[in-house]
Length: 299
Image (tube, rainbow, N blue to C red; front, side, top):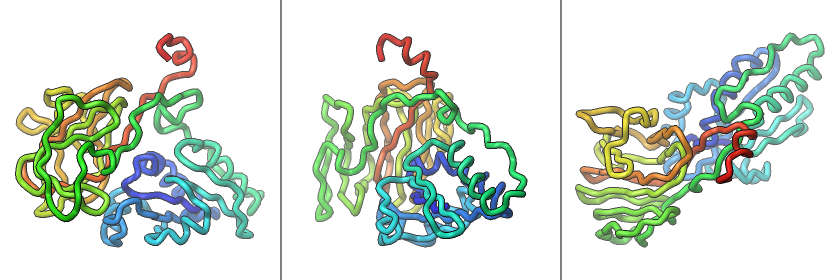
């Protein structure tokens, strides 16, 4: 299996528990997984950063660095993640683009292993790990992924600009205050005291962030004008002196918010000192049974 992925891609990360388990289940009977790391952002070309990410994520199969998109192009890949199943003769026998389809992928793995060895003993297929992966679950529409080009103000790499939050902040854009500068793929806070404001519609929010200088950096997180409630903390948020804080110690994707429903909110990141680099926001949604969705008159 070739798994085209990027450690900053939330869609890729949500599938990693399945790949880790497939490696554990089937490596000894003929499955070889190779992660093809094709970076979306320039900083993710650094081999040390990728090695650190692979270790943190518990990846025990080989990872190839595809920094120039040579394999991405050769396999006509168009999105993260994309998974190719290749048989023992070198023929591509299946391709899955995007999230989901984990039971079907595992069934295809087992079918190819039985072709190789009809006597092989294989386990039952994995049960869904997350509600979104269960049969009949659906994903509601959310705000699309937002990167530097969604910033409401234009920034250049030649000089920093003083930004002010507008009074009207419609969804689909990113807003900032403070002294920011454009850098490759992102924006950087150059002077102490700044913020990023995000109107969004989703259940969960993630951000690709990095410390440009003197890590770690600490960011305070507010939602709808108040401290993010503890029950809505993403996995990387911690309670510190009654406030929701995020510690940014390396370049990666951080899980910020986990709301109980897919709904509109305004998220605010307060940045007390310079050096924060922002690259992207990505979003998640709740899973609902099809019958419940069909009965909802607002859908």
